[in-house]
Length: 171
Image (tube, rainbow, N blue to C red; front, side, top):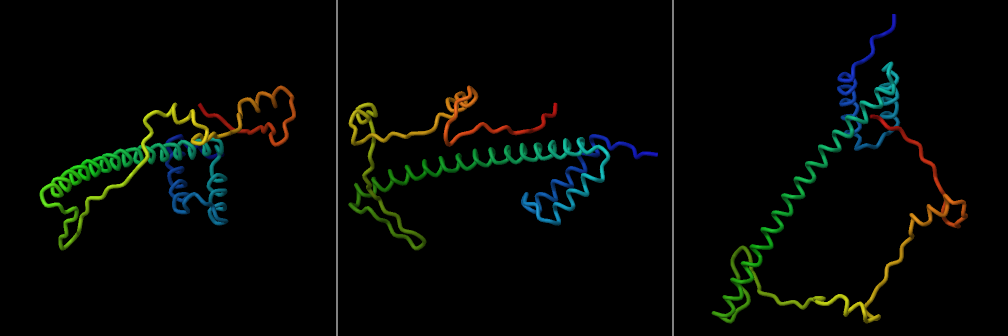
């Protein structure tokens, strides 16, 4: 009598255990992890289903982590913007202090603050600057689309080859 096939839900649950193990090792598989992984896949009758379940679980985890990273990035940007706004208010306050007292520095027990002035280059007309060769920098890169098209057409190009990669697609 053969064992009952594991359901998709059960595969996903088992995949969760596998993902937790992979996360513990930060995605790096040592010999023990490789052995455990091989046993995990060997323990299921539906190996392609097990692979599918692991990939689905990893994609779900990656999507979740990306959404969390995006949320944190938005929060960080909001805090950076608030910090810039408060810094601008502090500059205005220090300028007013300079006008009133002639001093550009304030000292307190826990901090000191100074009004500083720095020069920075501001480009107001990029086209005019680009017309001057001594201020122009050109970046050269490989046109992979053109190289690929020529390789597919049978042309031999030193330093480039066509490589076939194999993969699977689940739908």
